[in-house]
Image 1 (cartoon, rainbow, N blue to C red):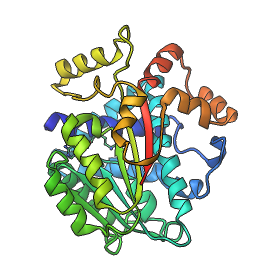
Image 2 (image 1 turned 45 degrees about the horizontal axis):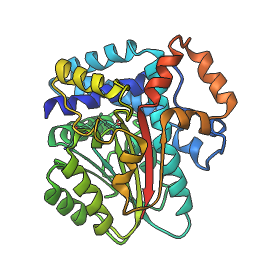
Image 3 (image 1 turned 60 degrees about the horizontal axis):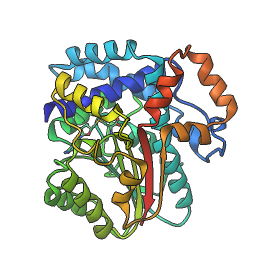
Length: 334
Ligand code: SAM
C-alpha cells in the first residue's frame, strides 16, 4: 500500500515541474475551443502549488525529507514527462469545466476526487465561490495517511499570513478530505452516501487511480456509482498496456514498476486499448475516450503547440508519441 501512496509524490512533483517550466497554468486561448471560466480556474495555480510544496517542509516530522524528494524529482523532470503531465492535467480540466459550465445556472453539483493524493483542484474550485457557486460539496478521498497529510498541510497553510487557504479549511462545510480504501466498496459507498446528496449531479475524478485497483474491485466501483448516484460525470485518466501483440509498452512498464518499486498495475494489460478501457463504463452514456496523442492533436491551438515547443527543446518526439498513445482520457455521463 505504501508504494501506491508514494505515486502521489511522483504526480505532485511532475505537476510542479510543469509549473516551474511554464507549461502550466495555461490560458483559454490554448484550446481550439476556449472554455468559459478557464482563466479564473487557473488564476492562483502556481502560488497554490508552491505554497503547498513549501508547507510540506514544516508541517510534518518527515516533511523535510519529503520536500527534498519532491524538489529533486521536480528538477530532474524531462521535457517528455512535462508534456505528459500538461496533457494529463488539461484532459481532466476540460471536461470538468465543461460540465460545471453546463450546470452553472440552475443546478447544484458535487465533486469527488477518488485517489486525490496532493491534487489541488479542490482549492481551484472552492477558492472561487463566486465563479463556481453551484459546487456545494467537494470530497477528496484517498488512503488514511494521504488524507491526514493533506489535511495537516492545508491547516498549516491556512494559518500563515496572506495565505490562499482560508482559516476554515472546510470552506464552510463544502470541503471534506475523507479516508477510504477504494478496494473496500462497502465502506467507500457508506462514506460517500453519508457526505453527499445522491440526487445532486456528481462529478467523479479518477486520475491515475483506477490503474492501481484490481479488475473486479474497480468494475464494482464503476457499476455502483452509476446506481447509487442519480446523475453525473465520470472523468478518468490512466495508462493502457497496448493491444497489439508486438506492442511491449505495457509489459515493460508493468515489469519495471514491479521490480523497481514493488508496484503493481493489475489491469494495465487487461484494459490495454481504448475500447477495452472504456467498455467498463458500458452502462453509462456519452462515453468518450481518446488516447493522449489524439488529445494533443485535437484540442490544442496551433499557437499553444508553438508555445510548448518554445519552453524546452523536445528531442524525444517519437518517444512522446509512443508514450501518449499509451495513456487515455475517458469521460462518461449517466
Ligand atoms: N489523482 C492524483 C493526481 O493525479 O495528482 C494522485 C495520483 S497518484 C498516481 C494515485 C493516488 O491514488 C495516490 O494518492 C494513491 O494513494 C491513491 N490510491 C490508489 N489506490 C487507492 C485505493 N485503493 N484507495 C484509495 N486511494 C488509492
